[in-house]
Image (cartoon, rainbow, N blue to C red; front, side, top):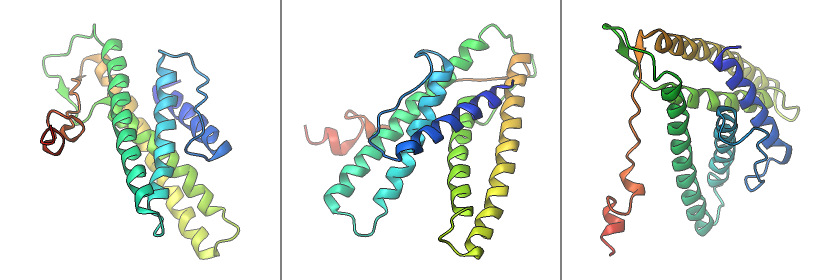
Length: 201
């Protein structure tokens, strides 16, 4: 089993588990052992699923402004949690390949493996929701057909991205590529670098 086959299976499980309650406040019941990559992949997709639905809620044109601000702050925190988790997954890859000596002509990729895996997780959510739209009995036939066409594109994109991730991991393992982990330095989340926050002191 390739890494992306395992990841997609875990992502699918997380998406299905989330939709058992379809509630952004439902507790995550991660079936995997904490500290393992499987646990982190499941948590990653669960965060994405919750945030997907928070993004739906905040787009309600009749939302109470106070509730909207609270939701925006929750989404911001979710984004930070997501970033932290992606960096932890990249740390797993760094550790996995730490003894690989890059070849003299080795090159670096435009993104780290975990940020590509991040896109794979979100694709799983897009596929789930597009399939839901393609099968809606209360929607028009035209709507279902358009969504079915989009679903086919998403499934192709999932396969292409999976092959690209697995090829990248193979290249890193063989020394043809190497990776670096650059921490996401989000200045607006840091009270010492956001002028709105440190200016109030």
